Image (tube, rainbow, N blue to C red; front, side, top):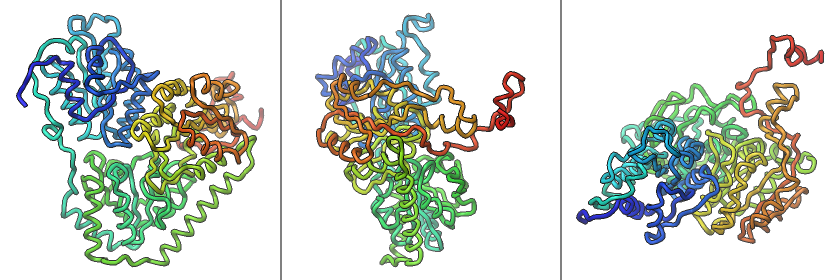
Length: 581
């Protein structure tokens, strides 16, 4: 196709069409109105949210489900700065995304005009790149660069264009994605793959850690075949509970905060670890339950698509820069050459099964402790039992949401969309909406505490407007309970800012916004309520009234210290004086 005359807005829109973009999320603004005026004719839907942060979380989840980069847009200045948290979260989660960022018009830059902000500097630290359009004729070229980097480096890219650059006349050739970016990654260095297979074959206690890369490439079946050749237990990385099927005999569950002790005890004894599609984050491998489970002397084979993450947190024996699925296929091929038929190590399998049972017994026992009115663990246990195997579950951050790491299991096509290590509240519900946009027929559930719900309940209007039948399961415990636990353990039960005076019920709020609402205050009603909500295929809020005194352990015991007070007026707050007060 030769270059033809078009406006910069048309060049941008046609590039989005070439990329297969079918919707863009944000809030309408004058800065980019010339562009979105083209969307209906181009077949691109504009998804209007209630807060721009939600647009980022929606597109983050949309990409995790589909593999396609999400696109969001906002008014220059405050519209774009409202996206900071969700873009930073996507950056931490390695989710490709393009933010179309109008900036102040070139004639007025530097005059502190209306809605002027230096968004380029703001976003440099939380994106993979910031691409500035230097001239209207470069509008499409720079957008292609943004998509190329977003996919190549697995993260968000800011596409900054002065608002007056949408207008004018340029000559442009619209390219197909294969003409400017690579969509396939290789298997890695062949010699390193040979060494990896040899190391696994020589191991006495190999363990596999399956991560986000396995989910993104749909490589779980290949990981299972590797595990079966070695009778190796498979652990999932922190909050990627969907990285290995929970009904497989070699599954031991997730690691990280509120993860599985079965996985941790398996890792603790490993002599060789195959870490597939994971950066092995610091927070995701910290000691838990007083178990320092990540072995210091194990030989680690780390496979990750990003060379920056190889050996970044743990020294490795073999580092392989590769697509997780392609590398796994090559490792399996080498193992099959040596072990044509899997031979089960019965002794090791018995140990794995015993650990699975011990962990299951422990979390069920904890869930069955009475609560007033509902033990939050019991609520999570009942939710898990009622989830269809193809459910997509978005989880927030906080006491209850994080405890879900103990209970959530995935066996079929279901997915776990979590806030991950950026750990911002208000993630789960807009993420669930994005997941539902990605798969209109899947059952989609968000697990949220009432603190995080206060940050995201306004998007119920978006769910109703877009007919997204997401079920929000709100655990109402009346507090910021993760922080409350810190005040219990470190501040002698002095609660400052931890209690949340919520409305009497969130159900009337949901109904007023056009959704369904269900209040549950009996544990045995949780499962039926969820089944009814999913069957209705309507946006629904389930409010589970749970015990605000039944708290999970602190996120990090090393992050706080007992308070020491030096000024006389604060002496009564000193931990050394608690027994005197």
